[in-house]
Image 1: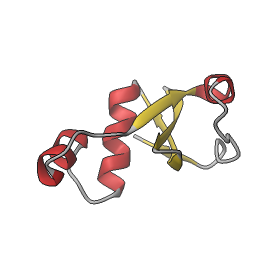
Image 2: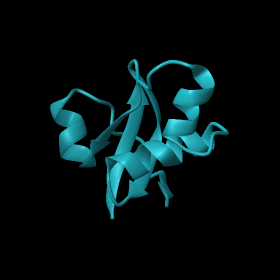
Image 3: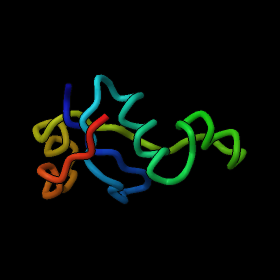
Length: 75
């Protein structure tokens, strides 16, 4: 599993340990009360803006704060 930082519009929602980016975005949507990212899109009626960035190095390369990397939510 890989650690992904999930964010949208510059707001970090958390760090999730998942098999891939989609699973990390689904876990984040579940934390918000949805069944999955697809369920969130359907209920909100607009496209998802969630982005899952793999690992600390990937986040740093994009200028994302990685201070929460140790606070991981697991699949």
